Length: 389
Image (cartoon, rainbow, N blue to C red; front, top):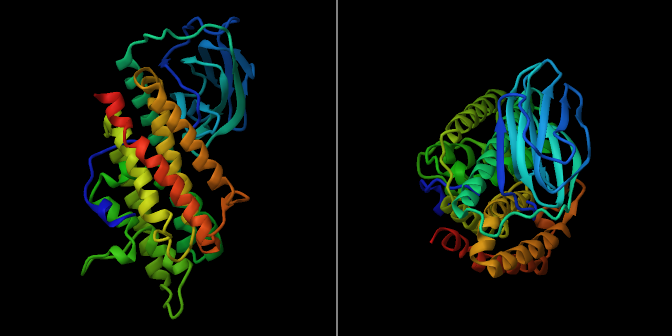
Protein backbone atom coordinates (compact mmCIF):
# COMPACT_ATOMS: atom_id res chain seq x y z
CA UNK A 1 0.00 0.00 0.00
CA UNK A 2 1.55 3.31 -1.04
CA UNK A 3 1.45 6.10 1.57
CA UNK A 4 -0.68 8.37 -0.59
CA UNK A 5 -3.39 5.72 -0.72
CA UNK A 6 -3.75 5.62 3.04
CA UNK A 7 -5.96 8.68 2.78
CA UNK A 8 -9.68 8.12 2.39
CA UNK A 9 -10.27 7.60 -1.30
CA UNK A 10 -13.20 8.03 -3.56
CA UNK A 11 -14.98 4.68 -3.56
CA UNK A 12 -14.05 2.87 -6.71
CA UNK A 13 -14.32 -0.50 -8.29
CA UNK A 14 -11.98 -2.32 -10.49
CA UNK A 15 -10.34 -11.28 -16.82
CA UNK A 16 -10.99 -12.55 -19.62
CA UNK A 17 -11.38 -11.00 -23.05
CA UNK A 18 -15.03 -12.08 -23.44
CA UNK A 19 -17.52 -9.19 -23.33
CA UNK A 20 -20.96 -9.67 -21.80
CA UNK A 21 -23.95 -7.55 -22.66
CA UNK A 22 -26.99 -8.53 -20.61
CA UNK A 23 -27.28 -10.35 -17.30
CA UNK A 24 -30.33 -11.11 -15.23
CA UNK A 25 -31.89 -13.67 -12.95
CA UNK A 26 -35.38 -14.68 -11.88
CA UNK A 27 -36.69 -16.07 -8.61
CA UNK A 28 -38.88 -18.83 -10.02
CA UNK A 29 -38.78 -21.70 -12.47
CA UNK A 30 -40.39 -19.83 -15.35
CA UNK A 31 -37.99 -20.26 -18.25
CA UNK A 32 -36.81 -17.75 -20.78
CA UNK A 33 -36.02 -18.71 -24.36
CA UNK A 34 -32.31 -19.33 -24.46
CA UNK A 35 -30.25 -22.03 -26.09
CA UNK A 36 -31.89 -23.77 -29.03
CA UNK A 37 -32.92 -26.78 -26.97
CA UNK A 38 -34.22 -24.78 -24.01
CA UNK A 39 -32.75 -24.01 -20.61
CA UNK A 40 -29.45 -25.53 -19.59
CA UNK A 41 -30.13 -27.64 -16.51
CA UNK A 42 -27.83 -27.29 -13.51
CA UNK A 43 -27.96 -29.55 -10.47
CA UNK A 44 -26.12 -28.33 -7.37
CA UNK A 45 -25.33 -30.63 -4.45
CA UNK A 46 -22.75 -30.58 -1.67
CA UNK A 47 -20.17 -32.30 -3.88
CA UNK A 48 -21.25 -31.79 -7.50
CA UNK A 49 -22.24 -29.10 -9.97
CA UNK A 50 -23.80 -30.99 -12.87
CA UNK A 51 -24.39 -28.90 -15.99
CA UNK A 52 -26.47 -30.65 -18.66
CA UNK A 53 -24.18 -29.52 -21.47
CA UNK A 54 -20.67 -28.19 -21.75
CA UNK A 55 -21.41 -26.10 -24.84
CA UNK A 56 -24.12 -23.77 -26.13
CA UNK A 57 -24.57 -21.44 -29.12
CA UNK A 58 -23.98 -17.73 -28.59
CA UNK A 59 -26.91 -15.50 -27.78
CA UNK A 60 -29.39 -15.62 -24.94
CA UNK A 61 -28.70 -18.47 -22.51
CA UNK A 62 -30.81 -19.60 -19.58
CA UNK A 63 -29.35 -21.75 -16.80
CA UNK A 64 -32.07 -23.41 -14.69
CA UNK A 65 -30.24 -24.03 -11.40
CA UNK A 66 -31.80 -26.53 -9.00
CA UNK A 67 -30.45 -26.96 -5.50
CA UNK A 68 -30.56 -30.68 -4.79
CA UNK A 69 -28.35 -30.36 -1.72
CA UNK A 70 -29.05 -29.46 1.89
CA UNK A 71 -27.35 -26.04 2.03
CA UNK A 72 -28.16 -22.75 0.35
CA UNK A 73 -26.15 -22.51 -2.88
CA UNK A 74 -25.13 -20.05 -5.61
CA UNK A 75 -24.37 -20.48 -9.31
CA UNK A 76 -21.92 -18.42 -11.38
CA UNK A 77 -21.03 -18.08 -15.03
CA UNK A 78 -17.45 -16.81 -15.04
CA UNK A 79 -15.08 -15.64 -17.73
CA UNK A 80 -12.41 -18.16 -18.75
CA UNK A 81 -9.96 -16.89 -16.15
CA UNK A 82 -12.39 -17.84 -13.38
CA UNK A 83 -12.29 -14.34 -11.88
CA UNK A 84 -14.63 -12.04 -13.77
CA UNK A 85 -18.26 -12.81 -12.99
CA UNK A 86 -20.50 -12.72 -16.04
CA UNK A 87 -23.65 -13.54 -14.14
CA UNK A 88 -24.72 -15.06 -10.86
CA UNK A 89 -27.80 -16.30 -9.06
CA UNK A 90 -27.68 -16.34 -5.27
CA UNK A 91 -29.50 -17.71 -2.24
CA UNK A 92 -30.94 -20.82 -3.87
CA UNK A 93 -32.47 -22.78 -1.02
CA UNK A 94 -32.68 -26.60 -0.92
CA UNK A 95 -35.25 -27.87 -3.40
CA UNK A 96 -35.53 -24.49 -5.15
CA UNK A 97 -34.83 -23.76 -8.82
CA UNK A 98 -33.80 -20.32 -10.00
CA UNK A 99 -32.90 -19.11 -13.49
CA UNK A 100 -29.85 -17.18 -14.61
CA UNK A 101 -30.30 -15.44 -17.98
CA UNK A 102 -27.30 -14.04 -19.85
CA UNK A 103 -26.43 -12.90 -23.36
CA UNK A 104 -23.12 -14.59 -24.17
CA UNK A 105 -20.83 -14.07 -27.17
CA UNK A 106 -18.73 -16.98 -28.41
CA UNK A 107 -15.83 -17.82 -26.13
CA UNK A 108 -14.65 -19.95 -23.25
CA UNK A 109 -16.21 -19.65 -19.81
CA UNK A 110 -16.31 -21.37 -16.43
CA UNK A 111 -19.37 -22.53 -14.50
CA UNK A 112 -19.35 -22.75 -10.71
CA UNK A 113 -21.74 -23.87 -7.98
CA UNK A 114 -20.97 -22.66 -4.47
CA UNK A 115 -22.74 -24.86 -1.88
CA UNK A 116 -22.88 -23.11 1.45
CA UNK A 117 -21.96 -19.91 -0.45
CA UNK A 118 -18.31 -20.32 0.57
CA UNK A 119 -14.99 -20.86 -1.18
CA UNK A 120 -14.43 -20.61 -4.93
CA UNK A 121 -17.01 -23.25 -5.81
CA UNK A 122 -17.19 -26.48 -7.80
CA UNK A 123 -16.03 -25.48 -11.27
CA UNK A 124 -16.07 -26.76 -14.84
CA UNK A 125 -15.22 -25.44 -18.29
CA UNK A 126 -18.04 -24.19 -20.53
CA UNK A 127 -17.82 -23.11 -24.16
CA UNK A 128 -20.11 -20.83 -26.16
CA UNK A 129 -19.88 -21.43 -29.91
CA UNK A 130 -20.60 -18.90 -32.63
CA UNK A 131 -24.26 -18.95 -33.71
CA UNK A 132 -24.17 -15.90 -35.96
CA UNK A 133 -26.58 -14.05 -33.67
CA UNK A 134 -24.62 -10.95 -32.68
CA UNK A 135 -25.82 -8.10 -30.45
CA UNK A 136 -26.86 -4.95 -32.24
CA UNK A 137 -24.04 -2.48 -32.71
CA UNK A 138 -26.29 0.27 -31.38
CA UNK A 139 -27.14 -1.53 -28.15
CA UNK A 140 -28.14 0.94 -25.46
CA UNK A 141 -24.86 2.44 -24.25
CA UNK A 142 -26.01 3.21 -20.73
CA UNK A 143 -27.21 -0.37 -20.36
CA UNK A 144 -23.73 -1.59 -21.24
CA UNK A 145 -22.26 0.61 -18.51
CA UNK A 146 -24.82 -0.56 -15.97
CA UNK A 147 -24.20 -4.19 -16.83
CA UNK A 148 -20.44 -3.72 -16.49
CA UNK A 149 -20.91 -2.10 -13.08
CA UNK A 150 -23.19 -4.94 -11.97
CA UNK A 151 -20.64 -7.51 -13.09
CA UNK A 152 -17.91 -5.78 -11.16
CA UNK A 153 -20.08 -5.48 -8.06
CA UNK A 154 -20.57 -9.24 -8.19
CA UNK A 155 -16.80 -9.67 -8.52
CA UNK A 156 -16.17 -7.52 -5.43
CA UNK A 157 -18.74 -9.54 -3.49
CA UNK A 158 -17.13 -12.83 -4.50
CA UNK A 159 -13.59 -11.70 -3.70
CA UNK A 160 -14.72 -10.29 -0.36
CA UNK A 161 -16.40 -13.57 0.57
CA UNK A 162 -13.23 -15.47 -0.28
CA UNK A 163 -11.17 -12.94 1.69
CA UNK A 164 -13.35 -13.51 4.76
CA UNK A 165 -13.02 -17.29 4.49
CA UNK A 166 -9.28 -17.19 3.80
CA UNK A 167 -8.59 -14.71 6.58
CA UNK A 168 -10.31 -16.94 9.12
CA UNK A 169 -8.16 -19.91 8.08
CA UNK A 170 -5.00 -17.80 8.16
CA UNK A 171 -5.85 -16.28 11.55
CA UNK A 172 -6.60 -19.69 13.06
CA UNK A 173 -3.18 -20.97 11.99
CA UNK A 174 -1.37 -17.83 13.11
CA UNK A 175 -3.05 -17.75 16.51
CA UNK A 176 -2.28 -21.44 17.04
CA UNK A 177 1.41 -20.85 16.36
CA UNK A 178 1.33 -22.96 13.18
CA UNK A 179 3.78 -20.72 11.33
CA UNK A 180 4.24 -23.10 8.40
CA UNK A 181 0.50 -23.17 7.66
CA UNK A 182 0.14 -19.42 8.14
CA UNK A 183 3.05 -18.73 5.76
CA UNK A 184 1.45 -21.05 3.20
CA UNK A 185 -1.85 -19.12 3.38
CA UNK A 186 -0.44 -15.60 3.63
CA UNK A 187 0.16 -14.57 0.01
CA UNK A 188 -2.76 -16.47 -1.56
CA UNK A 189 -5.27 -15.01 0.89
CA UNK A 190 -3.97 -11.48 0.48
CA UNK A 191 -4.61 -11.71 -3.27
CA UNK A 192 -8.35 -11.36 -2.58
CA UNK A 193 -7.63 -8.09 -0.73
CA UNK A 194 -5.29 -6.81 -3.42
CA UNK A 195 -7.80 -7.48 -6.23
CA UNK A 196 -10.34 -5.13 -4.65
CA UNK A 197 -7.84 -2.85 -2.91
CA UNK A 198 -9.26 0.52 -4.04
CA UNK A 199 -12.72 -0.43 -2.74
CA UNK A 200 -11.21 -1.62 0.53
CA UNK A 201 -9.05 1.49 0.84
CA UNK A 202 -12.07 3.75 0.44
CA UNK A 203 -12.88 2.98 4.07
CA UNK A 204 -10.22 5.20 5.57
CA UNK A 205 -10.42 3.80 9.09
CA UNK A 206 -10.24 0.14 8.08
CA UNK A 207 -7.41 0.35 5.57
CA UNK A 208 -4.65 1.22 8.06
CA UNK A 209 -5.93 -1.41 10.50
CA UNK A 210 -5.74 -4.13 7.88
CA UNK A 211 -2.92 -3.16 5.54
CA UNK A 212 -0.57 -0.61 7.12
CA UNK A 213 3.13 -1.23 6.58
CA UNK A 214 5.55 -0.54 9.41
CA UNK A 215 7.22 2.19 7.33
CA UNK A 216 3.90 4.05 7.02
CA UNK A 217 2.98 4.11 10.72
CA UNK A 218 2.38 7.48 12.31
CA UNK A 219 3.70 8.27 15.80
CA UNK A 220 1.64 6.44 18.39
CA UNK A 221 -0.33 4.43 15.82
CA UNK A 222 -1.09 0.86 16.86
CA UNK A 223 0.19 -1.62 14.29
CA UNK A 224 -2.23 -4.40 13.39
CA UNK A 225 -3.26 -6.32 10.31
CA UNK A 226 -1.56 -8.34 7.62
CA UNK A 227 1.88 -6.79 7.67
CA UNK A 228 2.15 -7.04 11.45
CA UNK A 229 1.62 -10.79 11.06
CA UNK A 230 3.97 -10.84 8.06
CA UNK A 231 6.90 -9.59 10.12
CA UNK A 232 6.32 -12.27 12.75
CA UNK A 233 6.08 -15.04 10.14
CA UNK A 234 9.08 -13.89 8.08
CA UNK A 235 11.19 -12.31 10.83
CA UNK A 236 14.26 -10.16 10.17
CA UNK A 237 17.43 -10.57 12.19
CA UNK A 238 17.22 -9.65 15.88
CA UNK A 239 13.41 -9.73 15.80
CA UNK A 240 11.57 -10.58 19.02
CA UNK A 241 8.71 -12.94 18.25
CA UNK A 242 5.17 -12.21 19.40
CA UNK A 243 3.83 -13.99 22.43
CA UNK A 244 0.89 -16.40 21.97
CA UNK A 245 -1.40 -13.77 23.50
CA UNK A 246 -0.19 -11.14 21.03
CA UNK A 247 -0.72 -13.47 18.07
CA UNK A 248 -4.21 -14.24 19.32
CA UNK A 249 -5.06 -10.55 19.63
CA UNK A 250 -3.77 -9.73 16.13
CA UNK A 251 -5.69 -12.69 14.70
CA UNK A 252 -8.94 -11.76 16.40
CA UNK A 253 -8.78 -8.19 15.16
CA UNK A 254 -7.82 -9.24 11.63
CA UNK A 255 -10.91 -11.45 11.41
CA UNK A 256 -13.14 -8.78 12.96
CA UNK A 257 -11.90 -5.98 10.70
CA UNK A 258 -12.27 -8.17 7.60
CA UNK A 259 -15.85 -9.01 8.57
CA UNK A 260 -16.48 -5.27 8.98
CA UNK A 261 -15.04 -4.68 5.52
CA UNK A 262 -17.37 -7.30 4.06
CA UNK A 263 -20.38 -5.62 5.64
CA UNK A 264 -19.42 -2.20 4.35
CA UNK A 265 -18.72 -3.31 0.78
CA UNK A 266 -22.36 -4.38 0.47
CA UNK A 267 -23.37 -0.72 0.53
CA UNK A 268 -20.84 0.53 -2.02
CA UNK A 269 -22.36 1.91 -5.22
CA UNK A 270 -20.14 1.10 -8.18
CA UNK A 271 -20.46 3.18 -11.34
CA UNK A 272 -18.53 3.29 -14.60
CA UNK A 273 -16.32 6.19 -13.51
CA UNK A 274 -15.41 4.36 -10.32
CA UNK A 275 -14.47 1.23 -12.27
CA UNK A 276 -12.29 3.21 -14.66
CA UNK A 277 -10.59 5.22 -11.93
CA UNK A 278 -10.16 2.11 -9.82
CA UNK A 279 -8.40 0.28 -12.63
CA UNK A 280 -5.86 3.08 -12.91
CA UNK A 281 -5.38 3.24 -9.14
CA UNK A 282 -4.68 -0.47 -9.03
CA UNK A 283 -2.01 -0.08 -11.67
CA UNK A 284 -0.57 2.80 -9.68
CA UNK A 285 -0.41 0.43 -6.71
CA UNK A 286 1.71 -1.91 -8.82
CA UNK A 287 4.02 0.90 -9.91
CA UNK A 288 4.53 2.44 -6.46
CA UNK A 289 4.67 -0.65 -4.26
CA UNK A 290 4.68 -4.05 -5.89
CA UNK A 291 7.21 -3.62 -8.67
CA UNK A 292 9.55 -1.91 -6.19
CA UNK A 293 9.39 -4.66 -3.57
CA UNK A 294 8.23 -2.25 -0.86
CA UNK A 295 4.89 -3.89 -0.08
CA UNK A 296 6.03 -7.28 1.22
CA UNK A 297 9.35 -6.26 2.72
CA UNK A 298 9.79 -9.44 4.80
CA UNK A 299 7.91 -12.14 2.92
CA UNK A 300 8.99 -10.93 -0.57
CA UNK A 301 5.62 -12.11 -1.94
CA UNK A 302 5.18 -8.92 -3.97
CA UNK A 303 4.48 -10.75 -7.23
CA UNK A 304 1.36 -12.35 -5.74
CA UNK A 305 0.14 -8.81 -4.95
CA UNK A 306 1.30 -7.63 -8.39
CA UNK A 307 -0.80 -10.30 -10.09
CA UNK A 308 -3.83 -9.53 -7.94
CA UNK A 309 -3.66 -5.79 -8.70
CA UNK A 310 -3.37 -6.54 -12.41
CA UNK A 311 -6.34 -8.93 -12.14
CA UNK A 312 -8.46 -6.23 -10.58
CA UNK A 313 -7.50 -3.58 -13.12
CA UNK A 314 -8.05 -5.96 -16.02
CA UNK A 315 -11.46 -7.04 -14.76
CA UNK A 316 -12.58 -3.43 -14.45
CA UNK A 317 -11.48 -2.84 -18.04
CA UNK A 318 -13.20 -6.01 -19.25
CA UNK A 319 -16.41 -5.00 -17.48
CA UNK A 320 -16.37 -1.71 -19.40
CA UNK A 321 -15.00 -3.10 -22.65
CA UNK A 322 -18.35 -3.57 -24.50
CA UNK A 323 -19.14 0.10 -23.91
CA UNK A 324 -15.59 1.23 -24.64
CA UNK A 325 -15.60 -0.66 -27.94
CA UNK A 326 -18.51 1.52 -29.10
CA UNK A 327 -16.85 4.76 -28.07
CA UNK A 328 -13.16 4.09 -28.81
CA UNK A 329 -12.37 0.76 -30.46
CA UNK A 330 -8.70 1.66 -30.87
CA UNK A 331 -8.29 2.28 -27.14
CA UNK A 332 -10.04 -1.01 -26.37
CA UNK A 333 -7.64 -2.82 -28.70
CA UNK A 334 -4.60 -1.08 -27.22
CA UNK A 335 -5.61 -1.98 -23.67
CA UNK A 336 -6.19 -5.59 -24.69
CA UNK A 337 -2.71 -5.80 -26.17
CA UNK A 338 -0.95 -4.13 -23.24
CA UNK A 339 -2.71 -6.20 -20.59
CA UNK A 340 -1.77 -9.30 -22.57
CA UNK A 341 1.88 -8.26 -22.80
CA UNK A 342 2.11 -7.50 -19.07
CA UNK A 343 0.46 -10.78 -18.14
CA UNK A 344 2.80 -12.72 -20.41
CA UNK A 345 5.84 -11.17 -18.73
CA UNK A 346 4.45 -11.79 -15.25
CA UNK A 347 3.74 -15.41 -16.16
CA UNK A 348 7.47 -15.94 -16.78
CA UNK A 349 7.97 -15.66 -13.02
CA UNK A 350 5.21 -18.12 -12.05
CA UNK A 351 6.21 -21.08 -9.88
CA UNK A 352 3.60 -23.73 -9.21
CA UNK A 353 0.52 -22.02 -7.78
CA UNK A 354 2.52 -18.89 -6.96
CA UNK A 355 5.49 -16.85 -8.11
CA UNK A 356 9.17 -16.30 -7.59
CA UNK A 357 10.01 -14.23 -4.53
CA UNK A 358 10.81 -10.61 -5.27
CA UNK A 359 14.39 -10.92 -4.00
CA UNK A 360 14.99 -13.66 -6.58
CA UNK A 361 14.39 -11.28 -9.51
CA UNK A 362 17.23 -9.61 -11.36
CA UNK A 363 17.28 -5.87 -11.94
CA UNK A 364 16.67 -6.47 -15.64
CA UNK A 365 13.57 -8.53 -14.86
CA UNK A 366 12.25 -5.85 -12.51
CA UNK A 367 12.89 -3.13 -15.07
CA UNK A 368 11.06 -5.09 -17.77
CA UNK A 369 8.00 -5.47 -15.55
CA UNK A 370 8.15 -1.78 -14.65
CA UNK A 371 8.38 -0.77 -18.32
CA UNK A 372 5.26 -2.80 -19.18
CA UNK A 373 3.38 -1.30 -16.24
CA UNK A 374 4.32 2.19 -17.47
CA UNK A 375 3.28 1.30 -21.01
CA UNK A 376 -0.16 0.20 -19.81
CA UNK A 377 -0.63 3.17 -17.51
CA UNK A 378 -0.94 5.80 -20.23
CA UNK A 379 -3.85 4.25 -22.21
CA UNK A 380 -5.51 3.03 -18.99
CA UNK A 381 -5.64 6.63 -17.76
CA UNK A 382 -7.95 7.37 -20.71
CA UNK A 383 -10.50 4.66 -19.87
CA UNK A 384 -12.76 6.67 -17.59
CA UNK A 385 -13.10 9.70 -19.86
CA UNK A 386 -13.68 7.44 -22.86
CA UNK A 387 -16.77 5.80 -21.37
CA UNK A 388 -18.11 8.60 -19.17
CA UNK A 389 -17.66 11.84 -21.13
